[in-house]
Length: 413
Image (cartoon, rainbow, N blue to C red; front, side):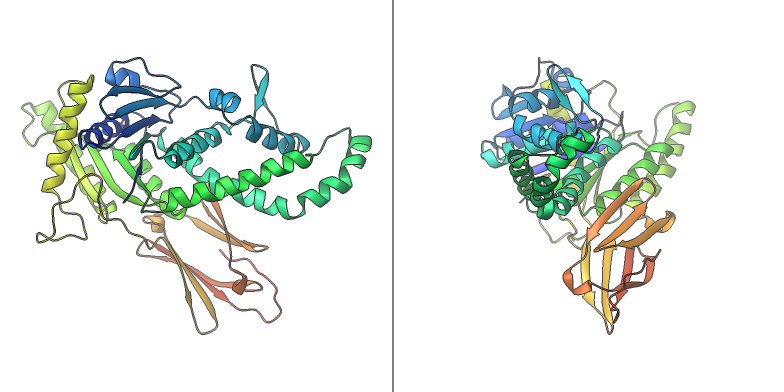
């Protein structure tokens, strides 16, 4: 079952507390557990009231913490990766941030964090790794990076060596620019293999699960809904959502009763949006979660709430679920043969409320929703096909391809 759990949500909704509760529950099962912060605004140390940092620290039997520092990782663990990407991007005129004596492309901090998480998973030191991610916008940038970089490296690599061998002398003379050398190309090839492995790891529901944390407020409801849609667009397995800071039905004052009614309306909407996920309602605590004992109480509360819930796929005859073994849908993306072509179905729950654009570019299908775009390499059997229709129904985008005798590709939207 899943060994890697990614916890994310809008900033300020309590995702770090929920991630900490996961880690404590896992460690108390006797499973060696690592709680990793991939949020640059680290606060694992604040929650557990310890001094955490860029190196693994055990704070309780079977429970360790790590706050990822991408600049430290770049210098100490992945200097060759940075050099390879540097060679490629400098020749393309990319802007750089100077960090000490090294340089990093803005936005590539996520790459080093992901590679470190992959290495920790591969090491076999921990039975479970819980990742406290940055707010959802940054998390989506983090999770789409392996596929995006894989796409770029895959396009460049087949002809990269030949191009650099032929053009390097001319580039130096005419443009005063160095193209990647053979060693850099070797590093790019290894990076490509690492990214493919990383992508397989993160998208496999047997090894990784993504969990959302939300509170019943309008802006949070909308952001969480879209995050769930984007995660499905990229094919990440989401199995649960935690609704945090829920007021009791009788809060004890007219002011709080008004807030409780507002929350009830948003909770109803959240329940409908996430009807196919396990949904846990965490009550509003009178005091902030700080210290190991407070996190233990929260983990116990979540375990009790989970026993009261029945995941969508379960009945009362099924065994009660536990936090680390929840059902998940695996039908995020599929192809089906039709009479004159193929049909691609992608789950994008809530997509009916968004403007979804599609276009065929070369051998890729581009899907754009707001500021997020995914390029899907099409199988060889669809070479020369055109898009006949695109429709969104019941949380699914259905793209129909028609085989083209001329082999000419067209765009659809």
